[in-house]
Image: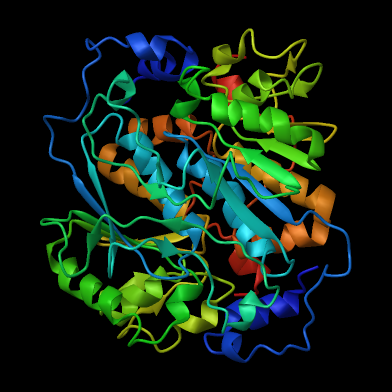
Length: 251
Length: 251
């Protein structure tokens, strides 16, 4: 629990944060909760798919002792840049950002508890190009407590076999892209997010924030989810089946 | 304008993006619009303050030729990590992400059109520590078309003198932190965002997405703003003065 008083102490006064009392004990240190969080990266990932969930978890990390691992094929920065060979890059903009991985798929942290898979244009690369990511999801899933996908990250989870015989959702503008993916996967078009067992899948981009809050509430409790949403000044979408973008696309 | 049909071609079909016709001309190439976008970075910036607005602009960049400049004191990656000396880091988490700057304040791109200033714990650093950022804002503002601040990024703009004699808003949990900042600044507590001339300020974190969409609508038109919101599956907050977090904090 993040107490409101703690929030006030932390955030409301420009100077009080520097004198915050250690008498306000960190919550959760004596409870069992997920500790090791991994994010799967690939070229041309969608920035908000990563940083929406991540910033909610950044705030969680102030009150729970948790660790972040940003996973890629190498430790080189990973860019959102859409390859110039893709027509989506037709405006010839020079507009992308790169983030720094902390671990590789070949040498990952032990005992990941939660793995998050973002989407983006990069999920349209070939299965061969995405083999490191798909194989990592396949190999890691059996030991995870939770898998969360955002947007077309569900395609990678499906290719890894994780969505076999499950309910799932994905990006609505790119809904057709899920066709043929997953073995007996029940793709639910009208869903902001879908939980099936320990697998949480969300609709496109911003929906990743909502699935993260729903997951936070389920795992860390309503009070924590609410406190984090207040810290981010985020008005949560609380209804998993309310999906204006499924309506928009006539699904 | 991003046509809905273009969106379908781009996003709806897994393979069609590779055969997207060049007959779909890039919009805006013959119009005058802001081209050079800068983001001010500093240690312990708030991730979503940057990546919410940035991902809307990432989508804009697919249809308008625009360029991104991520500015810092050096070209070393900039981390969201809260200094261990701050009690906010009391959970001893290892949970932060680093992004790669593309330019320095000492050697910035010429002719920036738009500058975005995020907030975060890092805005609580001393004026001396933040002098490069504050001075850059002060020096750059007179030649900008637009300045946008998110969350406590408004504090830096105020310290740079940009908010003198203006209406502005900032993070609501940290509302007290604005006290004494700005010369005759009219701080508006009940606002998701505030526009005053070419200066747009927003409330905390997620409000940065809403001010970006409001700005997009004002500068690039309603159709573009709507299309980008559909691409991000983001339900916009359309009312600048509707602010549940001001209510939450009793402001």
